[in-house]
Image (cartoon, rainbow, N blue to C red; front, side, top):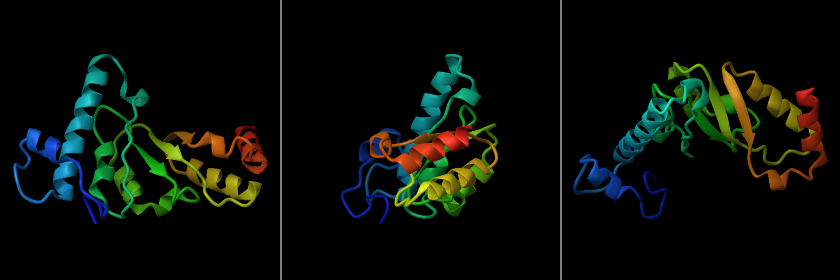
Length: 164
């Protein structure tokens, strides 16, 4: 249930301030437009300060297939990035992020939040890493919630083996 996901939606002030809407029920497209405007503005500032596109990454994400906010990661100043939790085993199954990636003309993209949940052994970790690394133009994977895996021998061994 977008944009509020079943609770009180946020974004009314941003939508109003930007002149997207002044009244009525908040819509997903309105929130997406506000987020997109904000992200582009921040990325342009960073670009104007000299940060090259290949070193600047955005982070967008949603939890519903087709959620328009995922596309706010795309702009001419940065490389896009998305979160992968539910699809960490195979990010290609995140059809929304992959559709956005297909539209991107950026040189790279990032898995700016990634965590394999429910892995049972080292092979699970290695398979997941191999799948994400096989997606063209991937620049980096940020393993999130390090505290939950730093003492997990199969996870650590998989990382070490992949690096080698």
